Structures are given as structure tokens and as C-alpha cells.
Amino acid sequence: MVSMRRAFMDDDTSEHSGDANPRSPLRTVQVLHELAVAGQSVPLAVLAARLELPKTSLFRLLRALEQGGYVMSSNGVHQIGPQAIKLGVALVRNRQFPNCAQPTTQWLAAQCNETVILGTYDDSRTHIVYTDVIEPSNPLRFSIKPGLTKPLYSSSMGQTLLAWRPAGELAQYLKTVQFERLTPNTISSVSALKRKLKDIRAKGVSVSVDGMFEGVYSIAVPVLDALGQVHAGLSISAPSSRGPQQEAKFAALLKEAGEEVSRLLGYTGSYPPV
Image 1 (spheres, one colour):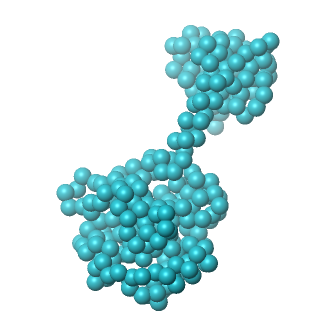
Image 2 (cartoon, rainbow, N blue to C red; image 1 turned 45 degrees about the horizontal axis):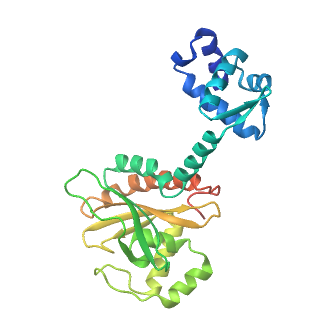
Image 3 (cartoon, rainbow, N blue to C red; image 1 turned 90 degrees about the vertical axis):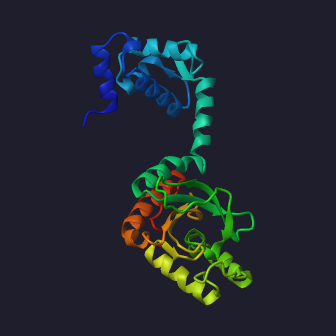
């Protein structure tokens, strides 16, 4: 495999007008990354060797970055400039939840052509809050607005949060929960909820049919953070007339998407969690 650095060097030997070179933007990112990783001022010769770039080409690029405030240069050494630091802060902010999940949820919505929902705890940790909703173009679809809250026990996503909740917190929740039947199929007892949570942990997904809304099928997986705690839930919802027939497909897609978002949040353990 040809390395990215090797490609940069090959490109430099074939193209001498830096601004016209289509690889120049990629080279720029590589230079900034190398300076950021170094954490200190780096001489031109050292930077050129690390990037496998001709010193003349690298010098021109550094001068351009210096003019924009992305690099600071003095006495032949170079380091990250204030504009690059601002860019880094913006990138970190965009990586935070739920922004970091958007590319994955959009991919999931395109794959399943059903309503994709991302949700997390409310302040009381007794309800789920739907933070992001992507609806399909299908005229027969499940429609819900972001910001809606519902009891954890009533939905597949809420049950997912409960299934991997720390044992002490779950025990306290089960002591105080007051059930309300939202539909004839809503879970309405501690014993039934315990059985459901055990099944969810075994399968890695939570499935609900007509549990929160009549006529709605939903399947959900957990999203974990760097501490291994369930941070949110991710679900696919569809009319119950067609959702169950696609359960295997939806489960596979959700596990892939749930793991991807979890990795973005810093989770490194097995997925689904055991």
C-alpha cells in the first residue's frame, strides 16, 4: 500500500505550483497534524524528513500557513499557530454528543428508510428525551418531534438505557417507578420489566411493539461513553405492520451504528456490552 506521505512526495516531484496541486489541502492537514503531535517547535529539516517532503515545497507551505496564523515560525523552527488551535477547539466541539453522531444516524436512516431516533436521559433519569429524529420520505411512517419525553419502561430505547444501568441505580429505579399504561401493551409491572431487561442484555437489542404508541414497532441499541456507561439509545421505529418483518436487518444495522457512535465517544469495550 502506498502511504499518504509517499503520495505527497510523489506529487511534489510531479507538480511544482503548490496552489494548483490538488493534493495541497491534504498536505496542509498533514503538516498541521505533525506539528500538533510534536507539541513543540520543529525545525524545517526534521519536519520534512517526517513527512517525506522536499524542504523547498514544505517551506512554501509553511510560509502560507504562517500568513494565515495557522503556523508560527521563528529562527528556523515551526509550531502550531493560534488559528490552528481555534480550529482544533471547533473540531472537538463538533465531536461532542450529539453532533458527532449525525453522520452515523444519517447513514442509518438511508440504510433502513425508517425513522431513526437518538435519545438520552432527562434530568431525573426516569424518562427518555428524544434529542434527534430523522424521518424517511415514506408517507406511512412513525413521526415524532425532538424534545418529547416518555417513561423509560415504555419504549425500546428507554428499556435499553435501563438494561445496562448500574445495578444500584437500577434497583433504586425499580423501587420507585410508577407504571402508567400508555397502550394495552405497555409494560406495567416490575417483574415484567426485569424479564424484559434480562432478554435485552442477552440479545443486545431491545424490541417494542405497540408499547408506547399503538401501531408502532421500535428496536433500539445502547450508546456507551468512554467510561463504559450507557450514554444514550439509538433506535429505528416503523409502523408495526412492516417493522417486525425487517427485524434481523434492523438489528444488524443498529449494532453497527451503535458501536460506531460509542467508539466516537471513547468506548473501547466489547459491543454490544456484556
